[in-house]
Image (tube, rainbow, N blue to C red; front, side, top):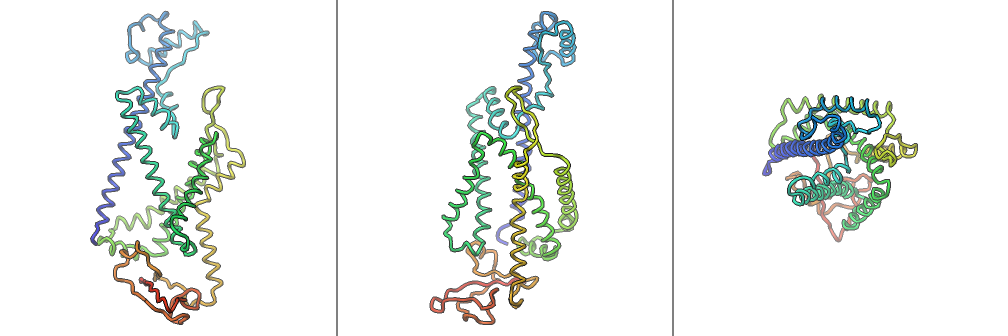
Length: 378
């Protein structure tokens, strides 16, 4: 093939891996810097109280005071002066209490940038990165949705700008819930349960391709498209290892969800700290709906297919196993077809030899003579 997509996949995979490792290094470095800074401030508070009783702490920086020496002094001081409230500083506790999610991005990072040299420069880079990441993700998600809708024959009469506008307005309306006072909790709910069914979808796709469509046909398709035949490693991964691992993940996730009641972290203004709370009954209903949202289209499509198949008058024009029919090929799919399609400028109306699920043939305007393309792939 003219385009070496195998090379592109390898480059993208290594780039993604490097980006993930680099991002982890940066994030955990920032978390460590923030935890050390808070720990030293806490130590300054406690050492200032301990200094009259322990003069050996004078003229010593916080880094020079070992944790064991500090803990021993704090224990002895507390026994003699219980009225003083020491913070009992711990670097591990500061790391465990680090903010996550939106709190990490907009609170911790923003605070850290004010304490490092060149704060305006790093702040601008960070928030520009967040903006580009959000736009890129949104465009990718939108394209995935729009591609699916454009493939629906019932929506072909709707103009693309109108369809995109309707989807955008719908997504915007749903997103307004995240801007309310409880937006953080809604975000946590969507983040925790919104993608629950995606693993099952990937598992179903894997089984469908490997065991319904056939791994031999799939391997042949890849060889035809890329010029490279997948070896034994990929065969083992696709047919045995990946399905087993995905089934184990789905089973363990389902067991965990059924045996543990979902909780979320709520902010307690009295203690100025977060505390774990159980979801209300109605919120669990919303969570179940979110978890099933990605599976409902599959079930609906299956039911519609079975109903149409059962109600068909005959199986004369039913799709045969091993063949794929594509009618009305679009410009985006023409490069994928090669020379495996033919032009049919005129088909007799209601001809028995015409390919149509309705059984009456492909109805066309004889005067217009609009051509269409029909591809049959064995």
